Length: 359
Image (cartoon, one colour):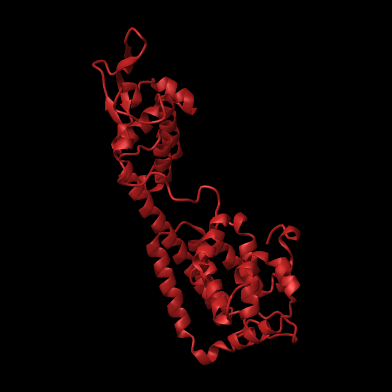
């Protein structure tokens, strides 16, 4: 029952379009529309090495195809016989650019040529005006290879998700290294290199090597040293110290006194999900399930180190704003950083959604 409730809640929070595709690989009895074919090519343009102009050119060709589907039944159902001049006008590029990208699309097997003796594209019509024979560029490969393209898209998404997790692990490890080590001029170059790698679309090999490097540097720090490796000492009891050890963090978390009315007002969604919890263990399990649906990954373990009260506030804050967050894990990471280093006050998390415009 709880799993159904969570799924129902998260489905309601999902952005439009975040549902299972209508057409799946292997279901050849249901043909995808020509625009669905274009969409899957657009989704895999990166692994295919396609530029935006190639996608625009494909869109222009598809717009010349009669009907909603690519069909081999009639020539006008899959052959674009528009001239390069017409295609250039519709895509707002030069004729030379059209020729270059057509060559690219043909080489990738996304188009095939049906050439006439003189190399021209044309269409022959019967007495009723219907096209019975045409030469030009056939888009049948898009329909014939649809299942293959869907699989490429799935693999690409999984790889992108894996790369995103790896990038987050590097960012978290880098933040930990900065906490453990004092400010040293000889480390500044390393931190700059690491930050540049995280800003760019670095390959998996580079990020894996970076994570290994950071981890090895952290392991070089003796455990007895880490408690003393602070940039500055706390000035007073109320100072927001970003390098508190775990016991201090938990103690500070329990000091937070928030009334039930404040919790209900600030986090109505999370309160609704936890209201029927049978025990503290059941409550923690439900929160972990929600964090899993938000795809927080290993970052959830770092959030839980803050203690029960702050963990509840952080998760509630995220859940209230999920519709406007494109990447929950990245958003949560920056939120956690701001809260732990003192640039964002904890009491700001208690402000209801309508009173807080942005983080």
